[in-house]
Image (cartoon, rainbow, N blue to C red; front, side, top):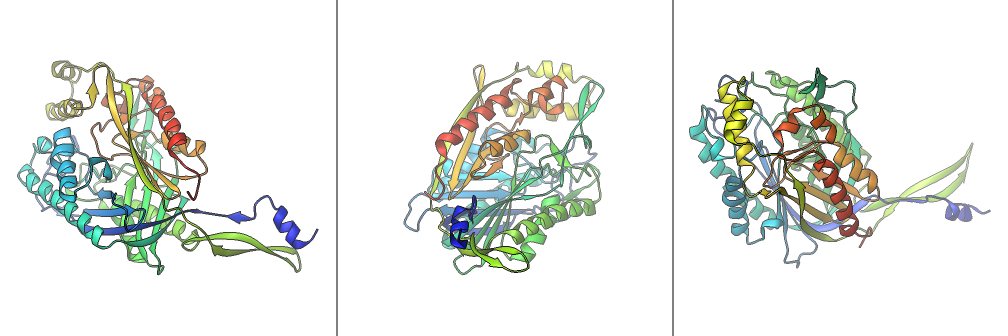
Length: 471
């Protein structure tokens, strides 16, 4: 058989990465609040007032279109904030205002929160502790900043190549630690966490990096109650490392993190957060380094007689998909018994009153426009950008959700995003978490079995939503 015949007979003679060829614009700004603002939400904290800044809090915006003439724009926004406590502050006062200013629909924007535990509340109803007087102005600044950078992203629109790839990062650890008849939230060395790191490298046609999308599941809980510093946690150092190398905005997209957190956490020393950030930052750079150049694939092109029979692979141009589309879906899941405020307070009678107040407020706040009779309406957004699929929802899923979806759909890169839009910032634990009375199982409104129901729903939705590569 000739060399050409051998090449043609090879089981694999091409390696084609997941690619996109779209129009994109990006922008970034600093949203760090003033020192003195309420920014220590830990129930254990003695004071919520900040006394300094570890690293700045940032906001990023990206607009994506299939072509320069495409009238539909899709915006991806990342914010270094923790969570949004209620429907009113999230949907009505924030995102509805943003989309009205931009002239788009509410489902044309995904706002993903890093979930730092060292930032101000983004809800007026949670501004109840020391430094609360600064919160309204902070929220207003974030809203106007998001509008500003989305408009700026529009003005920076250009044709880009996006290369998608999976990498590895071992920052996250499983944080359900069995002790007695319950699970405490802390490092569990006996169970392996998901180490998948998903990267989207955005480059213009001149090869200049315009943005790096980094999807990874891990709670930013390095900085605990002993620190009074405003901080993006490990995201800040990771951002510095990647942006210093790429000269482009770093978009951290929080993945399925319901049962994941750093091994070393709950500390007062910001250098520990920086060490955790180095793990994520350098893992990102390692993944970028192994990527093919933009819009290229790898082909088996030559067989060479040398000291051994050698198979030579060569980079070659590759076609990329220009498809950009989105769909909003609703997962209907049963909720648990919804306890009255009196019942919740009775159940937590042995907990410090201030902590009980916070728990009750959150439990009541997340019900509005989410609970519907015996069910909840859990929103999910599916986005296709070329060969990649984004799955975004408002809750905190256990990491097994993203692992299983990627296993079932290996032919495409999947970015799974927790903490996106709202309402319904609830945990989505596996059935075993309820059996162990884990924190996530009593915090959530969802009934046991909801994780498994949502997994099946998303699996089926992906089968109908996804398209053949390169469409």
